[in-house]
Length: 99
Image 1 (tube, rainbow, N blue to C red):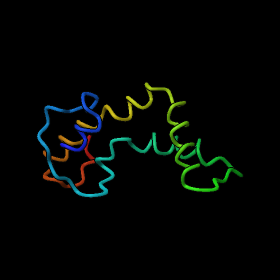
Image 2: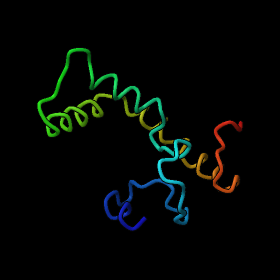
Image 3: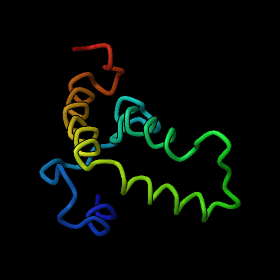
Image 4: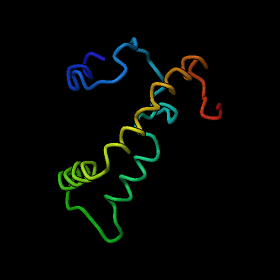
């Protein structure tokens, strides 16, 4: 949390939450949700498009993110706190099947 606070300063959401550990690579806690990852991937990896190196790919990812409407990004992130609480309530077990 200290690292994230240092990097994002007052742009970090959920600052009132105490730091919790959670399962690594948990799809239930992915803050960007599957919609945003899928949308980004479909825009960056167009058919026939190849990148010469990681730097070119990185630049394209940043440029593409800047073209995605902020509302879409906000909506993808806004449900993260709710999922965190579901994880806590369910003792770290899977919870995506719950309404």
